Amino acid sequence: MPADLRAMLETLRLQLLSLSVTAPYYYSRLLRITQQLDYVGQAWPADDWPVRQPPESLSRRQIHGLALTRQQFLEQIAEVESRVLNAEQTPGSYAGHQHL
Image (tube, rainbow, N blue to C red; front, side):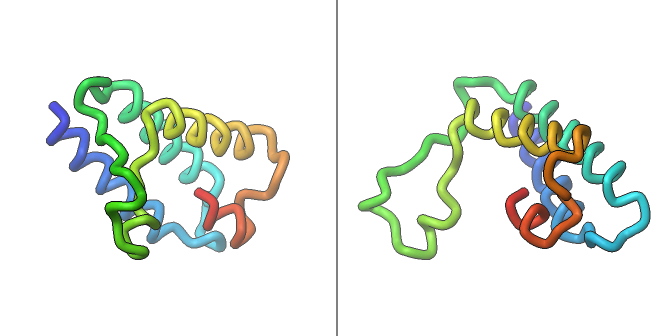
């Protein structure tokens, strides 16, 4: 199952990277991607979640891609979803999109 979820996660990542803040239906598409990311996080077996390596064993380039814990991942997805739904912060801004 994680292989399917990994493929889904990669597909969602690519969709997110290709989503422009000026694209039609940006907010709807962003909301749908966050909902799908939440599904992946919830469906991923806790025992198979990628484990974070100690920072001292990583190069500077690898530190940028450190894996979040499952809880951190779900919290960040919930935060983005909340921002899109409540329009607290404009997710269409470059900074908002980069945060995601």
